[in-house]
Length: 88
Length: 410
Image 1 (tube, rainbow over the protein chains, first blue to last red):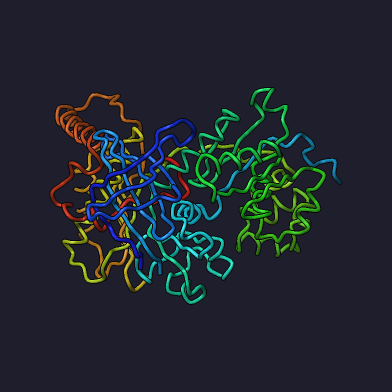
Image 2 (cartoon, each protein chain N blue to C red):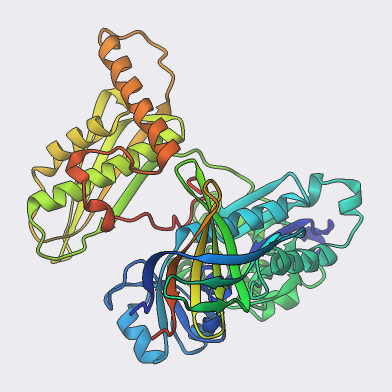
């Protein structure tokens, strides 16, 4: 019903850090299988915590699918945790 | 007739993110924008909708409807499981924006709040409420996302501000003042007024009141002595005229949690484990509010639509998950079979300080220290890092859901 795939992939991300309300903007990421995804819109960025560790969640899209990528603020690592290419 | 309406400047603003969770999901997942979306707490056809997007509502989908029925009305309906972290973030964003305009902000639930401008700065009060309303709408789009919309209502009291916020959904901005009160009420039904549902409507109908205007024109004696038979009638008389009667806060009386079982053929032991999970959740919420309890109440609803409940009142206040569960388990021995839903509540809450020496102080202090240490570890390393071995594995079923109606745990 919820056509989401739950993942836990380490990804490589190109992002810009600047000023403004949403200073961190991921632009593109590369999955372990070599596929590159170009982000066309950041839907929502919100912080969550895993205990005391802050993780920034980015719900993004490339216009083909929606993705959730997470930046671990302690380890500065990125993970792809969800993908949905269609909804029923 | 206009003379007894509140003619002061309307300085109460009600802000409401209608279809909040669905709108946030559409913001978060651009592919879903413009499509009918429903938010559910569990991915089954038998579940009830927590909320629906405007696109779904336009097709006749209503909140509380079974997902199965909603799909018949809206064939392309996308059902998503609720994502509380996301909604909590938007709630805090909205609260932050509102707090920039006044120190008197009250959140009524996760998706609506009130700004009282009566004591805000002269600079803020020097602006029109309408311009502030438009600014808040724009800030919500800038600071959360372009798909976010909210309704803004302005009035002399909370009731009129909320009524105004409901006039032009989903992106309205309206003011109700003494000048347009009658014309606004002329376009509404009795049940459009917050607080008037079927029972109150029937009461009003019984004395010949069928419209908000007739309600407005009713005299205080009729409302107090005949319709509501209490001071509530007088409050309605004041409320409708724009005088504030709802600026009251209520103390927390109970902490509880309920859970619809994930399967119809669970054994008694499996149900007890889920009950234990609820006890841990209730205990942790209660302690986070700095409270202990003396009473515990447990209930079960069966598939035959029966309701069983039992309660226990202790002499001394209790505090730990273990004590809550020990009491609940004892009470649950009398529970019936074929259970569909379970719930646990703690009541007779009191502050945590130990004021009186007890003969059992050592034992109580030891229990409190252990519980505090567990809470501290869970706060630091994440919820349920330490929990009872009995509830190992129940976490995938009994998930945290959005607390509607209360912003206490957000």
